[in-house]
Image 1 (cartoon, rainbow, N blue to C red):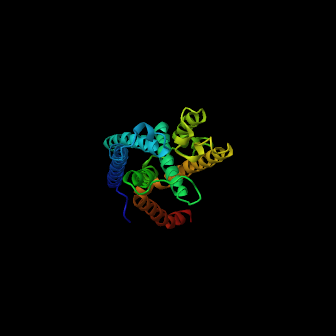
Image 2 (cartoon, rainbow, N blue to C red):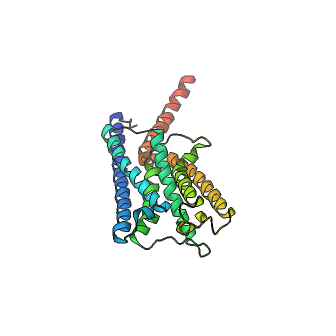
Image 3 (cartoon, one colour):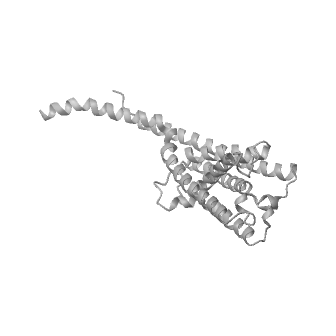
Length: 258
């Protein structure tokens, strides 16, 4: 029977941990670069007004996700260097908020492609592809497979995953609801309070927040289940060795009892 070499196990676990953190550092850096490049492309190539583009959740969400990812790039470098996990709840919920925001952006884009809806998202230009498809996919993969889980969320905690959307919705709702910005500039039809009944934005808000809550909860559960996939083979070896040791000791134990 082969005994587990604890030194070898610790070395393998450490090397896998370093690989995991370095991979996520690169992914986080790529997200930040892609996000900043998409914003720059929109402003300098498409000649879009930066202030005007801030009306759009996708644009603001990309900036937010890029900033969070750039910060997390350095967090991952620190984790790899110190061989530790940053388990701050504040960091976790910022990352969850970014992942939930990107998932919602992706869903809104997919729903917006339906012929019956007035909002038609851009998925053909470079900024559109980056902001609507590539960055959401990378952010989701980064969060689900890397972040250290903080355990099962309390009933209201998934709403912390919608914090960015809440801030955006409050600001845009006040600007368009008060008339500071005219309805003609509404980035999404549910902010056009002038041409739609109050029921339409209320229904849209209920849908978005219900989706946001469930998405945050779903992503947190996925993170708990999949973040250890990096170590699944090592874990399986330990489990198999424990079973083998138990089975080999069983006859001896039975004989002793006799």
